[in-house]
Image 1 (cartoon, rainbow, N blue to C red):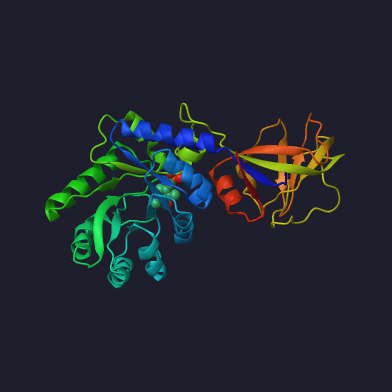
Image 2: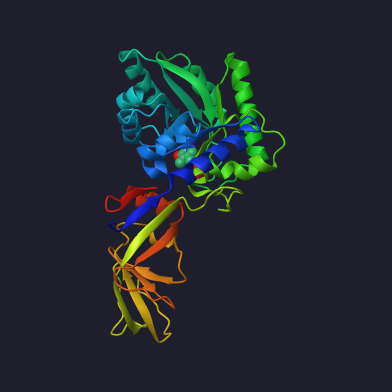
Length: 351
Ligand SMILES: *Cc1c(COP(=O)(O)O)cnc(C)c1O
């Protein structure tokens, strides 16, 4: 089997998806499965649907097109809408998240042309300062959106803990609930989705007695990596190792721990500093920064990552007896998983 490869355990993903769906259903919250970290991988998407998830969300319309082409039976939600892609958004996504009227007008234009109804969820800013309409501007936007042909407002949502690291707590969720209620009362409409956030909402969910009007969460990381996204604590009864990066030793030699010669910049413009711990077994792996966000890797063996360049990771092999051709495995965090799944150099192997 070729390396580098990522081993993907579909049964573990299915288990996590089912368990999270049950858990959130216990307080009437439905789970939308977010496929962007796996680039809309169709084998994984199929598993999510089989596990009872009816809506799949992705940030890229090309990933949604790929999943549709693979005949995956789900509704598709686009997480990030780009104005110039409006035609494809209307054609391939059932629902999209939006925060700009100009973009929604463009969606309306193509929905009319294609003679369909495109559903939108308006994103509300609650302090994380990525996407979202300021709450004070929301009524005005809703007023304009409900006049647009080909567009159906089906919900409001918010996204926290992504840019500003702002925690989705009781206060934030209560605020979103009250905004939703206000919109429903004022415009005499029913919002199908009150989408409270992502994998970072786990602690709020577990500790709150009252989820208010929140009835949807968009989950990626917790399904795939089995952890919540505020402190990266494992969620009980979930697998945290559904993905494993398998790399290969391409050189293994006893060498000094301290580079010798006149020290200048390394490949990435840093001037490296090293500690002299005498001679060590240094192992080179045939994978590098062009393949994976290296600092998101955790070796399964007791070895240390010393550094990396474009095509190599350099390891202190410690007491292990790693030889050329041996494989070395790593667990991945969100950034490492994202980069690995995106890299064209890494093979996906499904188990
Ligand atoms: C990526 C993303 C999610 C999923 O986040 P996870 O932390 O992986 O659960 C949810 N909503 C939006 C808008 C996103 O961009």
